[in-house]
Amino acid sequence: MRRITLSGLPLSSPTFAAYGERIRTEGYEPTVAGEGFRFWDGLAGIGGRSGASAGMVRVEAAPREATVFEEHRRSAELLLPVEGPIDLLLGRASPSRPDQPDPDRFAAFRVEPGEGALLHPRTWHRAPIAGTGTVSVWVLFAPGTFREDCHLHDTVADNLTLHLEPLPSPQSSNAL
Image 1 (tube, rainbow, N blue to C red):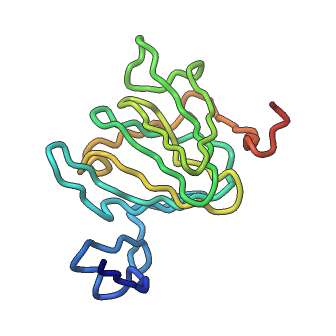
Image 2: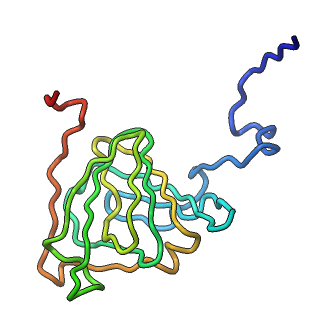
């Protein structure tokens, strides 16, 4: 039987180009940056019948208050944390005001590494908040979503600020 022994190479090796494309944020300016986050859109395109665009957001543990939210009316959004947990502030619109988040329909969720959150179209959200430190999060949605299907709402006009209490990680929980 033939045995081949291989030594691992870094993705930065020119050899990798024959197999795929190295995806990174270093050397690129963020598409948008705000308090507690930086987002790079379209770092990779995934072809196929429906296609997808992969981006990366780097988020921090603060701020834990939010007044500006976005929704995508035509596209779902997949969030995959890499190094640590993220907290999500999510909202839904009311039937009487379909283009604005309903203050009574917000909820907060913790997403652990190894999990993903697939947000339905029309789910209001802000950039994720790192559970601790700084966390990189892969963001996947339909190509062009950030440029063509990103609708913002500032809840200051509604006299509303959402504050997110720190959420416990399952590792720190006393639950059995």
